[in-house]
Image 1 (cartoon, one colour):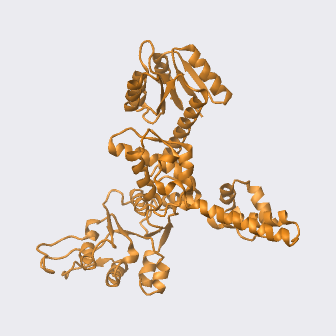
Image 2 (tube, helix red, strand yellow):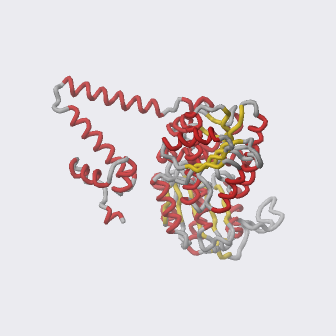
Image 3 (spheres, one colour):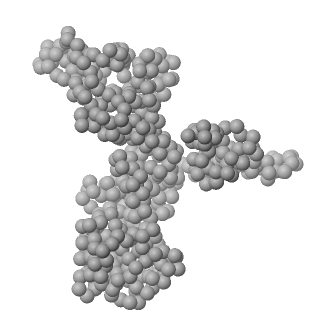
Length: 470
């Protein structure tokens, strides 16, 4: 980690912060003036976090803030100011300060603020280096890493792709990323939601129509296939496509030609198809609601997006991103979120997935009273997450099982329960990672050798070896 910079003409303030950071084994550098810090900034790398007094001889902390933000807009800057100097605090926020620290300050309060700034800086750097494809697609969870790998592998392909996942997981964002990294990236990306267009208009929307083809067709119209010529056509909610249009789409995918409504001349379709659905298409095929031959034409390569419940570790990164995004849209200073609020969000169920989290962050940007969002500022439905009931249920179930085993004198209770818990955890982690032991061990927080030994001890034959997984 890069050092924290302290800028203050008051030697005693510098000493207190130096001792505090040193005790926490956090690297730091101190400067007695803004000009000293700016000179060092010109000569080397920026710090992880900058902590500066607002009133100093020569250039002020606000001058330093402005110049730092011009060069390093993502660098968190904490401005120290007196209680009576609230106008300066407002100016600091308007200038892009991460937070202000009122003097005289409590050392623990200062340390907590610096830690949060360091954490935010680290997340921003990690997200920027990890996800170069689009700032909206963020995630460190193993399931999201699989999505990123799939996009990378498909970067030079024009193969048909089926994206599956619950509503709100970001299927259109992935479709955009697939297009942007494909050989067709300089051609149009055209999207159509087949569930949002009335059945009698969908055919014309997709294939266009000739003049006079039906009442109201006063002129020829190009459909989405023609609009996407040479590029990518994204068919969202393909599972809701009417049966007659499924037949027409299958014909296009089979022979590469289509006809406008009312037309007699075939038109060659040079588009890549990316389809998406939140439904189980295999089930709809069995129910006779979706053509099996069309399913196989579309399901060449499948990319599954995990629900937010499957990637809870990504919620803090996403929440910070959406708070920044909402603030930019509204033209205001971005709010910060406390650790308690992030823990509460991370425990929530989010049936609407990433889209619901984004809406919550927009609500918080508008409705939360202060610059720091705490757990009590969250919408009422998120203050007591539904997940807590699940936790109570499984804990109660465990207690009941223990009571029965103890009452029945059922052997070494501790050994049996621990073995059962380990078996379930490892089995579910292997199922979650597709059998990859290293990723399963990482998700559980245990070592690679430990999970291999436990699989053997517990008689689990699930989980591929790393040689077969690679």
